[in-house]
Amino acid sequence: MKLFEDPFIVITGGAGFIGSCLVRHLNDTGIYNLVLVDDLGSTEKWKNLVGKRFSELLPKAALFEWLHGRESLVEAIIHLGARTDTMEKDAGYLFENNTRYSIRLAEYAMHHGQRFLYASSAATYGDGSQGYRDAQEALWQLEPLNAYAFSKQVFDQWLSDQGAFDRIVGLKFFNVFGPNELHKGRMASAISRMVPALTRGEKISLFKSSDPAHFADGEQKRDFVYVKDVVRMITAFLQSDATGLYNIGSGRASSWNQLARAVGLAMKKEPVIEYVDMPADLVGKYQNYSCADLSKTVAAIGKAAESLSLEKAVQDYVQNYLLLGKKW
Image 1 (cartoon, rainbow, N blue to C red):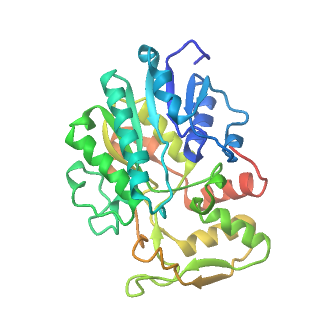
Image 2: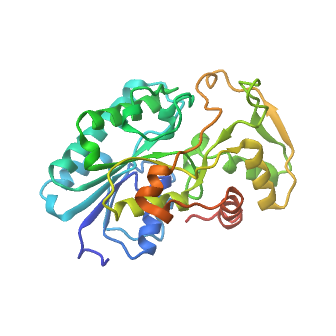
């Protein structure tokens, strides 16, 4: 696509982790007519956009004013912006920012016939006792473990109640890691902390198991998925006719011990792991296991749902970005 000559694609959270990587991927495929929505403030997020091409950068509060009168010029809205801190205790703030704003944006897109894709979260699956199947009928059986997950679940449920999933695409992201995440601080992936620790010759700290009857220390498992694979999947959904709710993950559950060993392998260092007590504010809010059921996703986008192995993805992230201090 050529700048200014094609319909706009609006990306909320466009300077954030997944958003900025999506901009890179779209740029690499020749798509530049992007309207990015993000509140940069005094953060370092602006660095995620260096070298990228886009048409406009708006603060969140200015989006609806910008959209007014441009309804026919917008092809799609990809809504990735949210408060993603799983430790945030202000549920009212999360509901206003993650739920109500999302409802308003979805209503706008549906009213004007624009394609709408949004970020849900695997955190909505809670402790996983109900499984990890991305079925609409299961939405009311899920029990999120924190206010962030609840704010995402309520939006999923609202869309289902509106019968909107025949027009909208919801994407439940699992444990995404990769370049452009460092501004997230404590919400960045554990890899971003493991690399500096190994560089300094320090031990890698992992949480002791909160459920030793089922998981040994460090053997709690998550579905880790590389951001480069994630943005490829988002683009595949954008360019498809698929609608509904879908998991976005690797379809593989890997332990934290495996993750630490993968980082050590990428750095050619043998990691020494110490197991530490889980902070009190995390107890009862921590998933010991997650693994995306990708059957629907594969049916919708085929081979685009494939992802790198954990070892290859970690190697690319560590060697080509973290150790070099580079963005993507």
